[in-house]
Length: 251
Image (tube, rainbow, N blue to C red; front, side):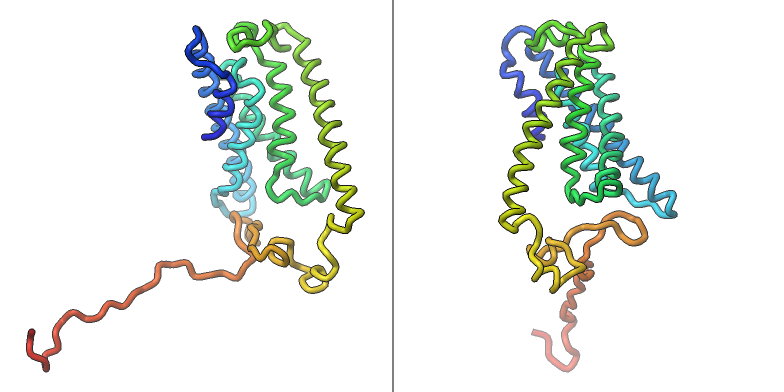
């Protein structure tokens, strides 16, 4: 729900002529993109399980898919047609799943929340998508310069988008690199050897934070906890027999 306030609220006005129409378009585009990306992400996850011989609907897949769609449409939520928002979201779901797979299996980087895929890769795709599918009419109505995306005869937006991505990567990469370097020098970047010796097979959630992280089940059917299984079924409560004893007189 916060994304509706973020995207629609960024218009900063509703009473001025045409503002309500722009906000309505923003809400519709935000919804369509989130739905399209969530369904694509869930379909890919379900197809992978089906190929392994089992099917369970993964909640993280659809939740992160929805987030991927929301991130993908943010840049162009006010300046693209609803059909374009749906396409942007569906491609965003593909971008999320592909980047998540590459980060974990190709780069061997453990990103538990898929933040780099959802916010990084899908954010970059959203900036490019806005530069491709923005219309002059919608851009002017939203208060921006009257410029069209590449698919509508304009090319400056794409150049600006690519330059923006380079600047963001340089800024965030430099600052993050400095922070990680300081943490490495201070010996805080990785868990201490004492924890590794005591629990070499456990992760930080279990060995330090006392939690039980979610990981894919061995049979590939969704997520399960590393913690010992706990019987969460409804407890059976034995009720006393309300029938009066035959040997005792009735009250």
